[in-house]
Image (cartoon, rainbow, N blue to C red; front, side):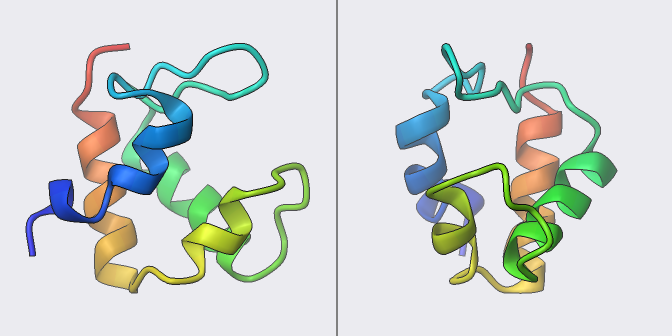
Length: 77
């Protein structure tokens, strides 16, 4: 499944350009390894600073998390 098909819920908050706004951080251009680690921490309950993302991210597989991290790394900040 193409990453664009399951990245919509993240884009809803972080913006279509993944640059974030206000208290919502930008994801575009961040290293994939950093993003992947952060998303894994959210899935495992180790990231407590976010409110909605830990609930959303639980539905993604490890492969989908990796694809999301690669997608956002490749976007221009």
